[in-house]
Length: 135
Image (cartoon, helix red, strand yellow):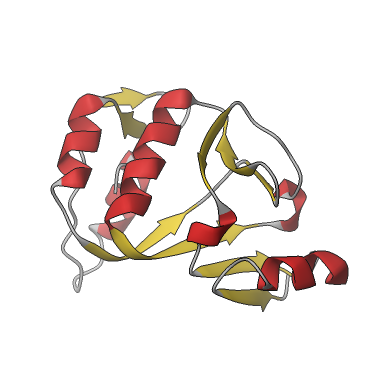
């Protein structure tokens, strides 16, 4: 992970080995960013990557408000065999500053039941698998 908060939670689990990518840490997200972070991520292989986005659209893709975090997310998606996007329905068709990928790069999209049925059909044609979680 590149998130200090996620690493802090994960190390409490006995059955996990936790690695955190180094770099400059953004205070607003407690996440490492920058060349050092990206270099470490690119030296790894991952079977699955869990990714969030601040905005997502069928046309404009996956977005986040910070250019440096977008670069880290892009690197993570490059090394993973399967990209899993965790997204609540309020993020659809919302735009943000920096684009870091396309919905076609997502193997599994996990979202809530607030996602309109018409959008679900469109998403199912683009992502590998769509999973709806009741809220």
